[in-house]
Image 1 (cartoon, rainbow, N blue to C red):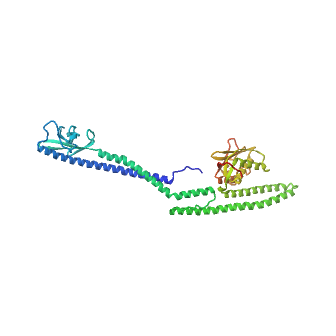
Image 2: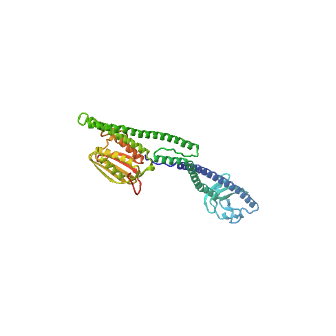
Length: 464
């Protein structure tokens, strides 16, 4: 039966490990990034505030020596390595500054600093010297005058750390998660290697049809126990299989001997009673019933042999030639109606020629029995070898279409609507050859049976 394949177990586990690790690492990265950014900003703010106190102390020293506030229009310039500071009047005039800020306007206005108690800390974007920067300012008094001191430092280090945290780290997390997922795939694949061996061995057993032992050594106790229990199950199935096959084989042989004897006796009695009109029809009917029993016994024997057949014993077969040979047998059978049978096409498959001939004999014979005048057998080869048997008869009753290949399926009319063992055995033979069989009614009427067998490309196909 066809089914939609699903993702392998190791792939599913690998994807889950990748997804879970990616989520966990992503949350850890975001949390860590936010924490460290806040920590860096806090340390930077504390550093700037300390810088303010240092600058105030320097300005007070300058004030005591009469160097502050400056008497000229130019601000006092602090000597290197001082940087990032300005001292402002309340009107916004730069009175003192580090060299790089001596000609720059205030980063924040003195009124904003004076409006808040204590130290004012803010960020500015695209400062003309420092770019994105953190600015701290506070007011202080000397004598009767109030001044504002501001310290500014760039945020490049913080932004760089944030970029590493939120851009580079996620890429690293992605690579780490992918590596973890791949590791899980490899690990699960290694752990499931005995399961693949079990699957391969089971497929070999299925291809050979006869249930043998798995005989697989597993690394883990659980898989070893599974393999052991499956072997026990296969042993039980094999025993039942052998018993059923032996029964079919013995029953078919045991039935054919008394049937042959009874037929001989009845034929002798029929000859002796040729002049007795009342006895002769009964004898003829008894011979016909024995013929039916003989055919049933033969079918059972074919079924037993088909089940016992091994794939290793299959040979290339031209299905077209096999169909022609089968049709010749039907034409030579005096019990069959003389109808037109048309065979066309060819296709090569691998199998047991005798078993496949029996399957075709049953299906084509059934079509001959129920057709109006013509039966067609068409063989085509593509991805598979397809044999289509169609007739111009009444077709299959609709209520029997799903049961055509069941054993002894019968409708209301035993003669016209019965399948007996013939179609069931044909289906069994086709399935044991790795094929499929289906029944339908043609658009213009008549029964259609389609057999599909695996195609084989060989140079010299045979039919037996």
